[in-house]
Amino acid sequence: MRKPTRRESPIVAVLLCAVLVVLWILFAPTQFGGRTSYVVVNGISMEPKFHKGDLALVRKTDSYNVGDIVVYRHPTIGPIIHRIIGKEGDHYTFQGDNNDFVDSYHPTQSELIGKFWFHIPAVGQPFTKLHNRLVVAGLVALSGFIVLLPFALGEPKTGRRRGKRSQERREPAMNTQSENGQTLLTLLVAVALASLVLGGLALSRPLDRTVSRTADYQQSGTFSYSAPAPAGVYDADGVTTGDPIFTQITNDVDFRFSYELTSKQAADVGGTAGIQAVVSDSSGWKRSLELLAPQSFSGTRFIAVGTLDLSRVRDVINQFEQTTGISSHQYSVSIVPQAQLHGTLARAKLDASYSPALKFTLDQDSMSLVTNGSSSDTGASSPLTPSQAGQVTYAAQAPNALSLLSFRLSVATARIVALFGLIVSLFGLIWYGLLAFRGTRADEASRIKSRYSVLLIDVDDANFENTSRVIDVVRFDDLVRLAEREERMIMHQFSSGTDRYYVQDEAITYRYRLAARSEQPRNGRSRTRLATGELR
Image 1 (cartoon, rainbow, N blue to C red):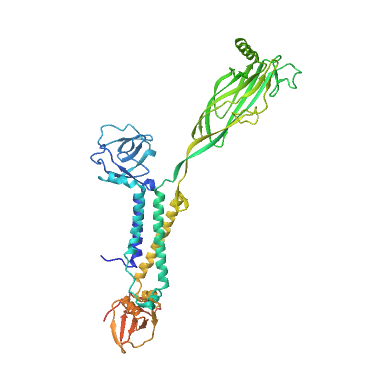
Image 2 (image 1 turned 180 degrees about the vertical axis):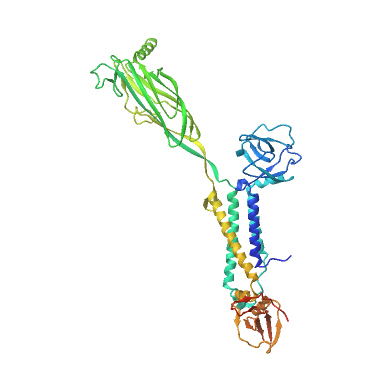
């Protein structure tokens, strides 16, 4: 088998890259950004066309018609490959070719995975192993190896050097432009391989990943109360928020509680709210009185209003003292709104309760607001404006990332970088291949001058052929090896439209001769003819 030459290697690499790109466009899985899905047949509902263990390839399309074999996603079973037998509105009706019943589930087009393209018998089970990320990475590496293979099989450099001086002259023997071209070619191939590896890693991971987030919220409220009183007792017409309440002149007190839930995240909540009055003493006894039965509300705000009957409070205290024989000069009365919230906050389930307390002291003559300190349960700065912070945890989508050594790169950015690198390297390889292809068509004299200009010396019509024995060589590379072995320059002579190259070794002159390479017509235009070496 003939190995590709160095001039052929770029062309072969470009062709291989083009083949890989076409294969990727045709067969890239949808998980990696392609349009092809791979489905393993697990039943007999489509026999005799498909059998269990077959691998079916389906492709996403814009329209699906009756008679098409399509894979759709069942919400509980998973992917199913059946034939469309009808359509009603946005819903499709399916049936297996081997079934005598119609599928009970009628998917919409958004649930259709793809239309049948072709299938490969009995390879479904081995194919499932390709889902492993290590296998994907291995396939990417194999693709890169295939691209590099033509360069590995290219022909070696001509000749071996002998001696220290010959070794020092080995690099100058190659033209700087040629060396730069080889460096550029190596760089392009390296970029292509790195882009393939990066793209394979990026495509083997989803763009987003599920992470846990927290959403903060604040429950706050405002208490107020009022009651009628005789004129002249208070500055206002009656009892207002903050005033003491004298039991001899006031009996019914109206309490109002305004509630609000605030958050930077969207909230969709509702619940129930009511108000209770709790009468207690220092011994730990307490009795609850309902001021407002629980009422339903929706949204993040509500207002609850209840009325406290002080005569009823006094009756409860008298009953306690008569029954227990315990009496106290002072009791506590707490107004407690009770809110139960249900709903969602930042798409997370929210179940919360809120029961701040507005405390009063009650003696024989009055009921006074307690203002020294705040409720430890609410952490409020004022008893009239309590607040309570809360937090929920919810699942959110965050950009996925790749860890490359000490760097982190988002999957989306990695895909863009890999695509950009592939495009740049592919166009670079195509450009280099075109130059190399043009180089193969250029006349040999130009190629020799371009590659071995450092070894060449242009001479006049010196008569080498009459002064020594002349031996013709078949290939110019053989002449180069002779020159490097003997540490001599190659003399170039052009006359009568013929290029001749000589290396003198004492009494022997080695010659490589080309046929006429150009003519100068009368119209002044250069007409070039492909030169070939000849042996006489």
